[in-house]
Length: 244
Image 1 (cartoon, rainbow, N blue to C red):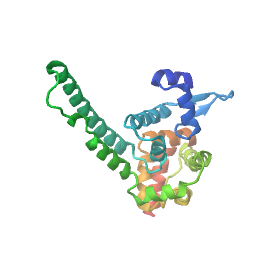
Image 2 (cartoon, helix red, strand yellow):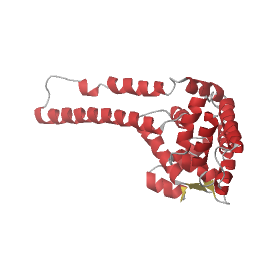
Image 3 (cartoon, rainbow, N blue to C red):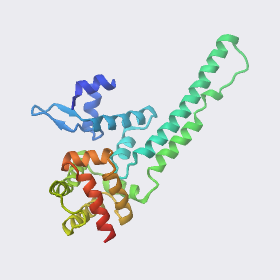
Image 4 (cartoon, rainbow, N blue to C red):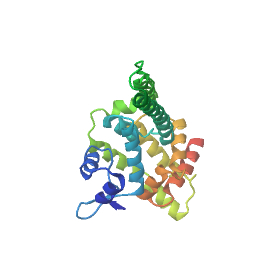
């Protein structure tokens, strides 16, 4: 765990900015000390990297928040889009450098403004942003979350994570993920997502379950809140529930 001062030194982001990100629900610290000081986990730092990549690409904070707070957020897809946009920016900067060198060496000549053109970058950025709103789940999530406060959003996220705690207990006890108790808990999670976020069909739920147990950010977050092994147990329980 790192303090806000350590995260500021590590990332180059001011303490005031980190506090603002916390206040608007963009980056909440994993824990707080008894005195109320923020403590950031490795998962928080990974999330901060995502935020900063989006900021480098000039995404507004409100768009970044909607994207990474969505239960449908696909980190791999986001990275692919960010890489493509950064490659386009690198190509544009290279052309600008070449133009500046040519002007320095040759002085004035035939005016060219092609290197200043950002249309290709702007078009791809617009497509990337639009892709997050192209699914019915994303549109439904935006509709249901409209008007909710940051505190309400945070509370719902915590309530959802709390539904994984029985899986952590079952995993610790060596229970069968295909048991009736486990399958009923899986249904509670599916119903909660449908009620508060978007219609969680069996197909969508199965996709989510793989993220829960894949060992990445989803798994670490679930295990941190519900106990070691909760994410993997959830994946198997949901698979058993979907298969009937």
